Image 1 (cartoon, rainbow, N blue to C red):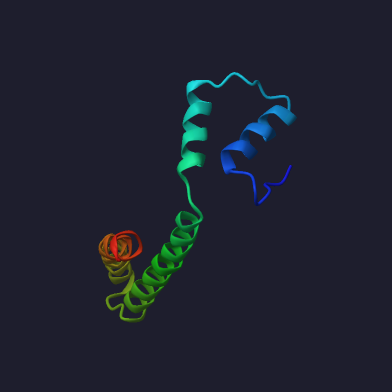
Image 2 (image 1 turned 90 degrees about the vertical axis):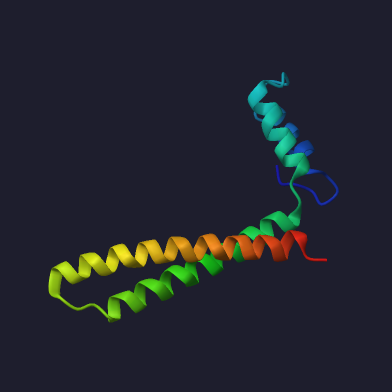
Length: 107
């Protein structure tokens, strides 16, 4: 059963669970899923997709830069890899804060 444009995600989830033989009793887990689906908006999906592309670009750029500037043989490769991972994580942390501010708090 595909979601209809006029149906909320939570209603679609309930219908899917019922159509597939799922119980109509809402347990704590199902209640959590339903509440998450009710509060989710389309923009949440789009912002997540945009962030994933930006994070991928950061990882690729930092890793390639570190790889192209390696010196010192195998030991240098290990140090460059460690440095690239740390720099990528820090850059993603900062970029996540910036993108969250722009996406959700900018007027």
